[in-house]
Amino acid sequence: MRIDFSPAESWQALNSELRRILGLPDNHVVRIYPGVAAALFEATLGLQQFFPHKKKYGRLPGTGPTCEFLLPHLLRDEGQILAPGPAGTVFEWQQTLTGECNFVLSTEDNPVTGALDPNWSGNSSELADHILKAKIFSISVSHNLWRRELKAGALQLNPYSVRVLSVSPHVAVLAAGPRFRCLPFFAEETQWTGAESQVLQALVSSYQEDAALIESFESQLPAPWQPLLATKKRLNDRAVIFNPEINAAAVVDELMQQGLVDVLSLAACGWNTRPDFLKWWQPLPNPEILRGSLVLGLPALQSQALRPLLAASSNQFAIRKQWQVT
Image (tube, rainbow, N blue to C red):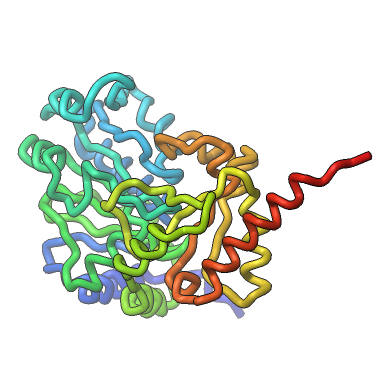
């Protein structure tokens, strides 16, 4: 016998538990969703219906792969997307964000490299201050920055903040300030086991950063390996390096055969087999850099075998370039 019914109070109880874990007061909104896209859709649609007279929506470049699907919905009913021009500055663009603007979409951290958006990092930038004073909602996707904040003890929210915390490909948590009063559309009907709160807690407790290790590693790379990120505004849970003369996928295979874990190649992005990367990653590294890029987590960086293996891979590639087919 099957009872096809999911009581809404189970979803509400899970939200209450998540609010406790996030350390937020009762006047803040906390909701769990089946992925980032679902949370973004409910948040944007809710604000569109709550403020139907505000048909302007801000959008920062590089807003992540999960924001692109929203654009056709925002353009309906004479909606207008406000984004910085190619030659303009963010400061010039923010002057166009007035009380007629409903919300601004952004991504707090690059889901691949861990680089932080300089305009939104820590919710304390000049742009963040401007839209708060203008009473414009800030909808941002936090891929891993939220883990750093919770590990340090506090999730940063202002009254107009709407942050979507990515927990897994199938779980996201919306955390919003007290000015966000939109009712849920379908979220109450989704079914959960209750173990999702434990997954969130595990992500926070397992999160580690080591800025000194990453700086030391990236500054002593064997040629021709180079660091990809030039900024220090980043999550220090990974190193991102590239070799413009090699396909990094082959290097990953070698590293894994030697027992290294937490390694990833961006070679497929360089071959344009993932065109969705071209839409949001700005500025996008050129294809040669992407094909030779490696993302290395702390477990790999702590291995004494990593640097010799990278040097050996470059030497092997140099030898293969000398081969001649007769």
